[in-house]
Image 1: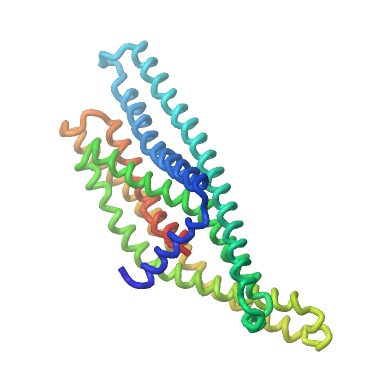
Image 2: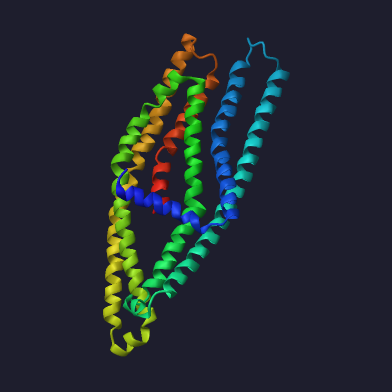
Length: 320
């Protein structure tokens, strides 16, 4: 592990030193809740696959009676309702818990920052640019609050969903999963090529926004001196320059963000075609005894395809 990554991980661990015991317990409960949220969709795939399998087993030459078919149909439908209710409750609780702990930790961070700032000698404080202290604490506290309130929970949810989808797919049919998941290599190559450029250019946009915000904060804090000196036009031009630079850098990111979705959707449609072709081929040979297995594997691999790039991106954003 590089020194930069080690420093980032240590900084991420240090964030939780601003939490109390109650906050840590609440975060632990929220993590468990998000794990439950991530598991619900793979379980939904199993229930839906069994539901499709019931339709496949019921027919003119089937030994399944109409009463048994309706009973199984109602049972699978109830399972879907139960999973929906569980997902809704766990999502609500996890979002609430992360939001409350994020607010409390960011508030404590602001307090500690002010204590450290007031403990500095006056000579050191005078050397700071006007507005830098307030902009720094506001930006840092907001990033911390958003990272804990939103990004951390989504990261755990997508990671759990990814692991659970892999486990479900390989449990029902490993050969079909390997064949269907061959598109993941293509998706990994695409994301591995495009995402680093997007992250780099996004940081450049954020850097320009920070420069513009610093100029605006400094101008507002010393507005009387600026007006008395007649420097409004110069300050406005300087601020407008960084805003235009941010817009120019943002326009460079837009094509890359659009390009990353085209190969993804191509891979999704190709996955559906490949899974149905190979799945029915195995079904006709007798290696698969139920069409529901094909649906379960397909939907699980589709979940993997849609969520495989999320944990990495959210991990980077959370640490940022």
